[in-house]
Image (cartoon, rainbow, N blue to C red; front, side, top):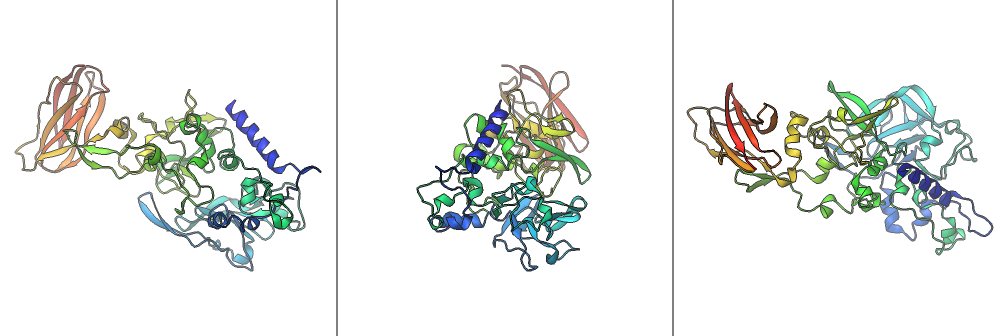
Length: 496
C-alpha cells in the first residue's frame, strides 16, 4: 500500500508540473535557470556549484568541461584523498571525440560522443576518487536515451526531438530543455512566473514536498526495495548497495515512518553536501543529544570519548557509486540509520527476489545495516562477533581495561572477581608478566561465549576490568584469561 501511494503521488506530481496549459491557464513552458538569477541571486549562485547543476556538461571546441573550483579531503578506506570536480578524457580518446560528460562533479564521469552515444567498455568511466579509469559495460557504445537523461537534465522529453537534437541519433528521439538539474527540474516549468517572458511573479511555480521531489531520481526502482550487489575486494567477499537508493532506504527507516522526516529535513537542496558548502542544515547531533561514546574505567568514570561521529556508524559508506576502498567501505553514505546489533554479516541481512539481492526488511517494515559496515570499516581486524559485544548498549559507555600497576609481575595471574556473587557489575583483576595479546572471555554454565571483555595487546602490568551483566540471567559464569600461551579460568555467580 505504501509503495502504491508513493507511486500515485509521484504520478500526480509530474502531472501537476507537465500538464499543458489550457486557454484559461498561463503558459507553462520552461524559462531556464538563468531567468531565476535576478530575483534569487544567492540561491542561484549556490546552485551553480552543486552536483545538480553539473550533472551533464557539454564539451565545447574540443575542450574539457569547466567545473566549479572546489576541493575537499575525503577519508575513506584508511586513506585520505583530495577531491576536486573535473574529468579526464579516456586514454584512447581526446576531447574532440567527446560531446558531453555525464557527472564529473564528485564521484565519477561517463562520456558521450558527438552523436549522442555513450562510450562503454574498458576505461570508459573516470573515478574522481581516486583519479583512475575503470571498465563500464561491454566494449562499444549505447544510446543515451530518455531512461538515462531524465535524471540528468531539466525538461526531459521522450520521442519529441526538436531542431537542436535532430542531429544526435544517440538520444533516440528524446531531448531536453536544459542540461543538468536546473531550477525547473524541481520547481516545474515557470515562464509564466518570469516578467521578462511576459509572466508575473504572482504566478508561483508548483513546489513539491521535500521527499517526492527527490525520490523520482534518488530511488533506483521506486519500489521500497534497496538493491544490493555482491563484490570481491582484496580477495574478501563483500557487497554494497547500488547507487541512487537513498529514497527507498528512507522508506524503510523510522526517520520517515515515525517522525515524518524527508530529504529537506537535513539537506539544504540548493547547496552542495560533498564539498561542505552548507548542504546539511540539521545534523544528527542537533536532534540526538548526549550520544557520545564514552570510554569508562572499572569504576565507571569517563576517561575518554570516542572521536567517531553519528554518521560514521549510522551512515557508513555502504553504497557504491563509482568504486570501493576496502571490503566494507565504498563511496556513498547509507540512509538507513538503524544499526543491526546482532552478530550477523551483510550476507545474512539480504532478501532474494528473482536474480537480485535486497537489504532485508523486517516484519515491522524496517531495514538496517549490519556491523561489518558500521564497525569493521574502522576495526579492520575484528569481526561482527566482536563488534556485537559493544554495539547493544554502546551509548551507555564502553568499559575499557585499566592499568592499575605498572611494575612487572613475577607471574601471570587471574584474581577472583569482586563482589561475588554480584548484581549486575563485578570487577576482574589480572596480571601479565610480558607484553602480549590478551583475551578475557566470559562463558555461561554450558560453555557458550557470552562476552569478550578484553581483546588487545597489553604491556606487562596489573589490569582491572568491569563486567556489566545487566543483560544476562542469574546463574554461574566462567571467565577465562589467555595470554602468551597461558590460560587461566575462574567461576563467578550472578544473582538478580
